Image (cartoon, rainbow, N blue to C red; front, side, top):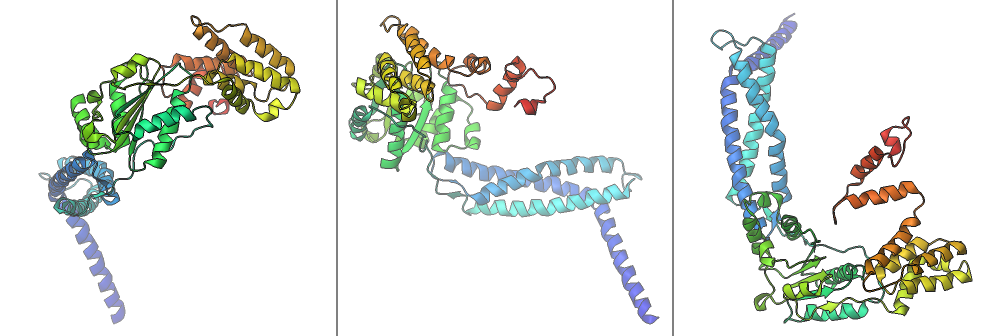
Length: 452
């Protein structure tokens, strides 16, 4: 009986302790809320100090934030909404108290809120202590990973060895800062630039390689955004800039002490490098280079590219080799007449790589000699002239278009022409638009997912 009494006494003490603890959380709610608000503001101040340090380091590209700092910042972001919700609910709870706001109307909800607030206080204290360590000198950065374009997928090239060697000799020369490549659309300028980019990654791994597509409708903000991502300027540092001048200054600060190669593809008019923060390659930075491709030779002069190099058409042998690669030997060997017709069609493309690739891919796998005859006749019906060059190109492209399986494919292809040049078309978005236009499926019994 005495033993049972001891047990009951222990249970009673435990229950009283629990009740006292719960009552304490309710009674201290208002004070804890004030403490949480004050400590949260202190944590936010510490966070701003750490972000300022990160911005300074990342802005000059001496390093990148450590994973520990990134995790700390993420932890603050994760609890922010919960802290703000607790503070808001606390105000409401206290305002609803009875007896001059001393006695809660709902003890259960007040206890639950008090428990959450106490838990948040501990988390905020821990995060503040960790953040103060970063402010006082704990490492917040690590050695930056190599940025830049990296290796670009590239198909086999034909007939570009000579022009490639000429470009590379200028890359190695200290007295050449800007290198210009010009030539007809579809002649292979972009392909050559990709090849150069990949070789830079292999032969000059210490160089920062930056790839920017400029386009006819150029957008300076988009160009600068591409450059800053390539050189490692983070979103926080970038969004803190209030003007284009501040952004160009940040890019300049990151690049002026680096060896870099800026590859500008599809330039239609002079691009002032100063506007986008790129230091012009000079004697003090002679190893850095700017390479540009354009259809217009005078653009090279305006970009201060001496003696620009012309990317020319392929010769007859090179053109036939490229055409054979795209058609495939399996198709060529199906019938002896196909090889003869392929030679005639390749000759009709006049050494323009774009034409050879488009026609070659269109004819790949076609084993019907009559189709080859018909396609060859379509090509020869539109003669090459200097004054009607585009008409001939479009007739070549139309041959590929006609080879599409049906009108559904043709309509979907043509729909892409509604977008601006170099616009990034999201696959999911355009599929929805094709469905809306009725191109893909008119069966109303099928779900959107089935149609996709």
